[in-house]
Every structure is written in C-alpha cells, then in structure tokens.
Length: 513
Image 1 (cartoon, one colour):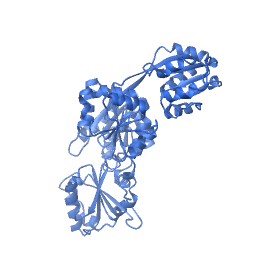
Image 2 (cartoon, helix red, strand yellow):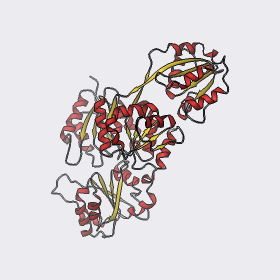
Image 3 (cartoon, one colour):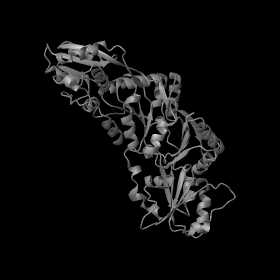
Image 4 (cartoon, one colour):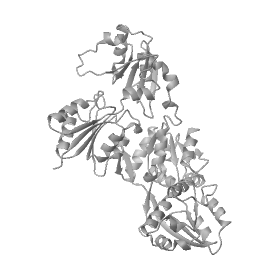
C-alpha cells in the first residue's frame, strides 16, 4: 500500500486569492479534503476528480466534528494510503489547533507537513486599513485568544494592560465586555482606540470603531457577531487613510453570474478582485455536436474560402480544435479574412494568434452583416460555424449574397449542475429552483448579470414564471441589445444595459450604479 500523508494547510482569512501556491498544490493532489467553516468554500473546487470531502465545521460551540474525531479521521485516511489536505482557516498554528493535530499524527507515525497561511490577526487588520505595527504607534503586537482551554483560567490582565503594542484578540467578541473592562482596570486608558472587524477580508467585511470605554455598547447597537477580530491600540487611528479594501468599486455587492460554467471564470475573478461576492448560477452549458462532418469538410478545403465568420467564442474554440485535429495550423488561414462579433470573440481569436479583420461597432449580427454586405461578392465562399439554436438572421442574410457553408458545431443547453459549498453537484430542475428562490427571498442577491439571450431564457426556466415577482428589488444587467430584448420578452425588467458587449463594461455598469 502506498504511504499516506497529511498536509495541515492554512487557508488564510477569507479572501480567495490569499491562499499560498503551496497550499493550492496540496489541495489539487489530495485524495481527501477535511475543511473548516472559515476556509473559503471556493477552495474546494480545486480538488481533483474523485476527491473525498469531509466537513469538519468548527463554528464556535457548534462543531460538525469534535476535535478528537477530526484527529482520528485525518489519521485514518492517511493510514489508508491517502493524501489528506486538512484545510483550516487562517494559519494552522495561530489558535488553529494545528499543533495538536500534528502531535496526534506524530504519535501514530503518520507523515505530515504544515503549510502556513495568512493569519487573520495580520491579514484581517490589513484589509480593514489597520497596520498591526507602525513606527509612530506600535513597535510590537500581541495576538491573544478570546477562548482559553479552561474557562476557569484567566489571562494576565495586569501584563496586557501595560503593553504598549497592538493587542489582537481572536474569537473573543462574546467576551468583549470582559476584555474592555479588564484592560481598563489594568491601567489601559479608556480612550484607547478599538476596532471590531467582522468577516475580515470577505465581501461582507464590516468594521466598527470606538474606544475601550464605549466599544461594548457600540457592538450591541451594531449587532456585532462572530467571526470578529478585536483590535486594541493606536494603530486603529490609521484606518481612515489606509482603508483600501472597502473602497473597491464592487465592495459588498452580491452579483449573480449566469454564464456557462466554463466561461464564467473571468467574470467571477473580476467581481472578487473588485470586492464583490460572485454567486455562480450557470444557466447554460455548451455541448459540442458529435457530428462535425460539415465543419471538417470545410476545413479540408479551407484554402478555397474567402471568409470565416465567428459569432461566439465557443465557435472559435471548436473550429481551432478541429483545425489542429485535421493536421493543419494557422498557416492554413493565410488567405482567409476573419470576422468576429463582440469583444469576447475577438479576444479569444487574438489568443489563438488571429487578429480579426472585421469587427462591427455593435456586437450584434445585424451590425456584422452591414459590414460584410459592403465587401462580399456572389462568388465569395464564407464559412459560418454557429450554435444549433443560433438566431437565423445572419445565416439567412449571408446565404442570399454569397456562397455560404453553414456548420452547426455546438448546442446551448440548460446547465444541470449547482454549486454547494464550492462543490458542484447535479441537481434536478426543482432543486435548482428551490435554491434560487431561497436566495431571492432571503435578499442575498443585489445584481444578476445576463451575457446572452440564452442565459436569460434558461434562467427563467430555472426560476419559473410563477416566481417572476421575486426578482423585485434585484437589479438585472444585460450585456447588449439582443439579450435585453429576450429579457423583456420573458417578462424581466432590464435595470441597465451595458454600453458595450464586454465583461469589463458589464462590471463598470454595476460599479457606476
């Protein structure tokens, strides 16, 4: 039997991109991932096919698995010869009980490594605009747990009250009143600045500030709840100048993405980078047609064609896949002019090494036809690879003015999967509808983006016409005219239409709102 191993991995404080490269590598090769509540659930998507996922929970006083059971399960899985990724919020050794898990493994002769993570004690303060040290305010810092192993034990408040550096209490918001009272009794000035940072580094991060004397009353008034960091010290005063995270254009916005799963990464990444939460609800899936006879035949005699017209990135990907499989490469297109609808299609072509000769001003078939009509001759041969369920306009219009080869290369179908805690599962239409309606009823969505008519069509199929009114209060953003027309046809209210058919323009429309 192959030898198993456990990686005790720090997942960082919450922001998806604060995971280390080594942690990512360990997740991707793991046979089993045992994860905590505070580890970003998006990391679970990094698991390989067939990976086993075990929810260890670990909310305050509410553990899905008690610590002794977590120790036992990671050891048992490794003893079976498996690679185990133990994914923990923050850093494994900063009040993460990583030391206890490491000892347990050592005593049983099980190989393990520890992968450090960004601790919320530093990263969380950073994202709140608070430097944990500053030459003019604090030359040291002290990280203290708000929960001692034995509740009868006491921190040395006399020492803590005299420290001049920054004090950071983790998991201590339930004891906030005691912490503030004890520090003042130990000599800490009642005017000492305090910050409470909830859900640090996440889209829903919130920060309240005050001083030691008033912070408990402020916390009650603001309804502060775990997970929350407590920061005590003069460094809190720098928040006004250094608060970069909450000034991001999409901070706090919850944006639903309805694009195909394989195409949503750019949009999701941009939303996260700009401070928002991306809620993935893929409504469409791209299914490549099994019969590519027409396309393959055209590629075999591609040197006889004058134009290739691409109306989507999917058509580009499938065309070039078949081009290479035929034994040809870009040189075969030397005498062919290439037309493309939309910035996304143009970008994918550029990535393939092709600069489109014709890109219409508007990303619609009518605008492209207007451009082509002026230059096409009756004897010109034009290849148009499209979706089986694409609009007829371009095909019918080109067929009247040139020698057209129309190849249906893929089909847009409704996506049947959903994402729960970062894990993709096949769900029935009714299950997907129930989850979507729950999100809308709980007011968990601020914007929904639609990047094609088909995303709107299948979104409504998932939602159900009877639930249309549940979209009230949600702002629906369309990428362009055709998409907007379909949305209105389906009874949806288009809140705003992107000026350009680009992902960047969609996000800018939301940012400017």
